[in-house]
Length: 327
Ligand code: 8YV
Image 1 (cartoon, rainbow, N blue to C red):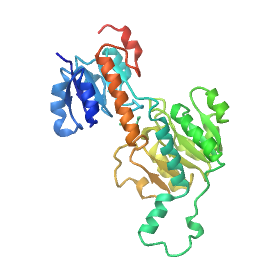
Image 2 (cartoon, protein in one colour):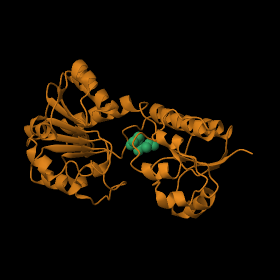
Image 3 (cartoon, rainbow, N blue to C red):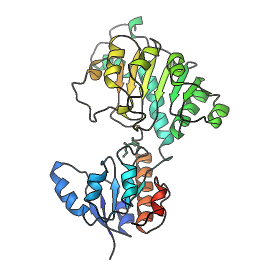
């Protein structure tokens, strides 16, 4: 008998078939209030869970006594309580690397869109307000040859640095838990403190995983340190920023503009003050959302999943220490 597993995200038929070769799949295209009860019912027997965004903590794990693996479609796994998974003897996996270049493209696009006011000016034309040559109140600011500060120099941060250095001739500063000699050599990036980065950078790009230490990492103090001409972009998780402090910084002109792909609450409340500011460019968490990359992520998640179910070590295992623990 094949082991029962749950996929709780819409996936390509080929991915479903691939998993079905090894498993009996209970398939939920999406989880919502109406099917949660059915999901919990299936959870009692499930050996594996594959999907995005579900909070997996002690409470959920207690409802899933047979679980062997949770395969997260995404590189960020702040939705997973990893110590709890390890305690319950459950493997956790994610999908690093396959999205680096796509997310970096998104962040460059978001910086340019914010600096050059692309959505605002697009709206101006489409609403019939392009009536004469553009006057200075619509000018943007240059991105090329400015100083970019990257907070979080992981694999995605490095892909952003590559574009900014070679494509835009930008001067790169970065702040990270540890030094990255490779980016210092290849992209002439300079390591500095968070305070120094906030003070010196023209563009500040946040690309760090969300954890207890990084929650509200950027708040009132950091915005105050930034230049009044600074452009702040966030492609990590909304909660890494104190959103109220960001609203005040924009309202009080502490910074010039912001480009945001992530928010504390997603989807964001349409009445949120950030959405009525012309100098804020927003995206609905689409950093990795291209056909190619989302397919690669789901495929990677399925490979992790099947390997884990078959009793092998999945390629992107987050908690290898779980292999030492007898369940
Ligand atoms: C999406 C992401 O949230 O990989 C991540 O960490 O933020 C995204 O790509 C999602 O997990 C994709 O399905």
